[in-house]
Structure formats: structure tokens, C-alpha cells
Image (cartoon, rainbow, N blue to C red; front, side):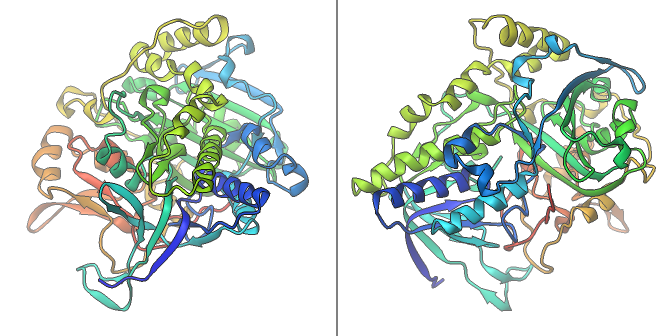
Length: 546
């Protein structure tokens, strides 16, 4: 196919915190040096922020480095944390509030801000454009350009392709975006990042990456209940009933709104677990219900989280480019925060790339990045918290909490724990596990999947190829159904996967129109049979204020 070719100094894939920080920093350096650079950033969402989903309480450390006068510039970090509460839910009615002194230090939020990360990214996008970055929302990077084992850029997705693969009247071929260096900042489980890690063996000698699925809702609540700046975290019920791990968050943000969500570790073993339904029933617990009752849900979304930390962090350089932020897995799960570390990885990438470009280098491996990143506060922070996730997986909620209290609050324990079992390998046969009867949603505090997808503003163009690819179409019914009761029906938070019966018997149905791009299926499928690829540009959720 004949494609238009555009050439740049740098192409960046993904308009999240790490990609936008990379773009802003390299253009700042170019302006300071009086050097012209051509930098392009492509984003699969219909606009910057459309696909961004995070809690989010953030540290401003990286923002201070990137834009020291961000307050005067109007960055949307408007809600300072005013209170921290941590609970352990012991049953559907009871809880224990953790004394402040017993909370692991990384979870203290003094000086942090409750934000809409989507709005923060929209603001960063404005700064990047003002600095001269070309930004193209609605243009997903669909494939890599690799020549002689060197990454030379990306190809954007074709538009106007029918479900059967034929070209519609509206067909437009994607473009080749070629660059001296290409930066991949797609977020957790980016499909090109996944390919790069495999192709260049970037995870050699590392523990397998570990993930959680974060499910979040935005609520308008009774103004009399609103406590701007209040932060709640907790663990225990209902996940504890299935011996699963994870935790909830509830943040009082501005404008009489709260955000509430549940992170379920994807290391769970019971295939009957439905993270979506765990979240819905959790909201009925008195600790959360008291904040939400009488309010109205405004939006819904879900996203996987790369939470393995330092032990799982792959090599971040390869010939022709870098992989940064959550695409690599720079989140500090001990803090339940990744924005500041993702931004820092992008800042370091920009600084090392700019030095290479000044030296008239191109399409080589910027090995200097590794030493520079390992000398940064982000690496130091990840190293300090390297045992947090493995301790929770190995010792469980109570044992892991005790280990981490000693390790984080009293003295560093001089060992490195490892968790070498991939999340998809953890599932046990359904026959060996307790079935879970989830309560029906009441339409006030709890809801169903399809109604949730609707309020998430999820949409994909009709008549396009399915972007959820099965390596072997027979596996869902021949293997996953008899052994695991086909867990895709439950781990997907958007009702994408169904086993349906008709006059011809059972079939595995993929409702790709519902997909919120969380990537959980790509991670948790026990046969590793599902691959998420980019749909037509602009498809997916359109998150407001998330």
C-alpha cells in the first residue's frame, strides 16, 4: 500500500503524562539552545484526555521541574489534600480505621493534590502545542516501522476499513511517521510497547509484570456531605471473601464531586471473581455509602495498572527509541501513584534524546538514558518500594501490611522479594473454587455493566474490524469454558465477552463496541489468546473530568 510519509526528529506515541512531559521538555531544551526540532505526538483518543483514567492523587514534584510556575500558568491542580483516612473493611457492615501512625509512609498524602488526570493532560497538551509540538488526536499508532532491527517510526491506523477487511468509500490509509527517535508512552500494556518488550527482549532477567484493574466512577454528591480534599483508602471486604487482594479509594474533589474506585489485583485465583461486581457491592459498605448516598453517578471507566514496580521494570531503551511511563511500568504502587514517576521518566528521556540529537545522532540506542534514570529520584523511589507488591502477594493483606509497615516506617528490610508467577497463571479451575453470587444492582449505588458503559461515553465506529484478536478462536469454548467457566465474561468490566446459546449451540461473542480499552483481557486471559490492538482512530471512551 502506498502511504504518505512524514519525517520528524522525534515521534511520541501517547498523550498521557509521560508522553506529554517528553514533548514539553524536549521543546523547552530546543528553545533554550535556539535549535529547531520537529516533534510529533499521536494520540488514539478523540482528544487529549479522552482515554485518561486515574484516581488521582498526585505529587507535584515532576510538575515543579517541568513548569516551576505551574500555579501561575493555571495548571488544574486545584484541590489540595486536607485529610487522610485508611480503613480495613472486616465485613459488609464493619470496618477498622487505621491509626495515622500505622499507615505506611508512602501512603501519606500531605502536600499532594486530588486531580482529574484527564484535565491535567489536556493542560499539558496546551503547553506542548504552545512550545511547537504537532499533536494529532484520533490517530492511533497501529504498527511499528522496524528496519534492520532498528525502530524508525510508526504507521498510523487505516481509516474506513469494513468488518470484513474491505475498503469502504471513506477509506484513508494510515501514514508513515518516521523519526530519528520514537518514544512509546501508550500507558499500561500498550500494544506496541508489549511488542517492543518481546522483540528486543527488554524484560530479560526481570520478574513478570504484575497488574491490577482499576474501576472508577465520578459522582455528584449532596453538598452537605462534601469535604473537599478528603482522601480515603482501604482494603479487605469484599475481595477478602475470595482471598483476592486490592483496595478502594474515595476522594472528595472540587465542585461537590467525589471519585470512587476499586483496584483489584489481577493475581486473583478464583475465576468466578468479577472485579466490576466486587466494586458495585463494595459501594454499599457504610464507609463508602455515607459519602455517596443521595448522589448521582456522572461517569464510569476502567483501566489496567502496571504495578509490579522495580523488579518488573524492563530495559527502557532499544535501537531507535525509548519506552517510558506506565508503558514500561514506572508506577510506585506503594504510593498508589504513577503520574509523577511517569512524568520524570519522560523528562529524563527528553534530556537524553536532546543530547543525542545535538550530537547529530539518529536511530541508535540511547543507552545513556538508563544511567540517567537510575540516578534520578524516580528510580530511588521505586527501589525503596520494590518489596511492596511482592509482600502483599506472598504474605496476603495482613502479613504484607505488617512487612511493609516495618520496611517503610521503621527500617528498610535488606532483602528483595520476588513474585515470579504471571497474573494469568494464577487462575485455578472453576470446579476448585467457590462460586460467587453477586447481588443485583439497585440503580442507586450499584449498577450494571451496560449502563456503566453508557455513562462512560463509549463509542466505536460501526462496521470496522474487531480490535480484540483471538489467536485461536476455538480456545474460549474448548479450553477456557470447561476449565475456568470462561473468565472473560467476568474480568472484563464492560460486558465485551459473552458465551451465548442459540439454535446452533454455544458461541463466544465479542461485543467490541463496548470496549473501554482497559487491556484486562490481554493480561488475564489464562491462555494468553487475546491481543488488544488499536481500533479506528477516536474510538473508545470519552471521559469527562476523569
